[in-house]
Image (cartoon, rainbow, N blue to C red):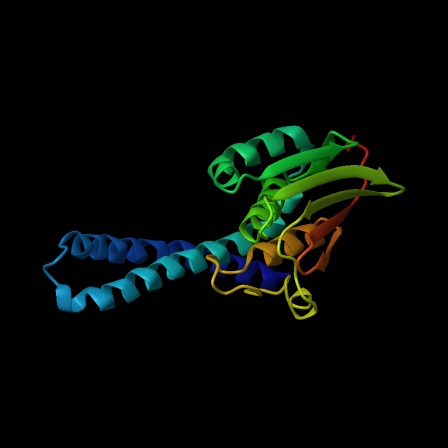
Length: 226
């Protein structure tokens, strides 16, 4: 326990302390970017630096996100699923419109006892991926929520490109990206699994290439889940 606490403190402190010098680097690079044409021979290197700094900031944010999972998992409340989805659809409205995506809800229950921030993060990631990894068809994403026996079942189904057997084996691994040409560090599903595991649940995926994917989340029922 003491080792884990020390490690958590180290991760929090390190990720925070790295942001200050990174900010100075970004400010310096921004000034150089504004001097367009003055450093023509350096422009290829500036592109590499810009990309590296962007990736570095993403990694620092990922480290901080992993460190916060267990702390946030403890802070639960009765989360309104419709409010969460209203917020997610508003946040993704540009991508939804650009891709002519349709988001459908089938909620047999309206509330889940969970960390509101963590649940939003999970559903945002799954809905966003359903749009990002689309097929030639207009994206259709269906979010379901119901109670089955002694657990709550959440599922997110899409009609996207789907995932092959080799991808299914690593999709929940850290940095387990399936399509490397897409932006992102490939940590979203890893974080989702960590959050769900910390809450005593589990997540799995069923997928067929060219047909789509269904992510199924099972969570323990609590007396405040409705």
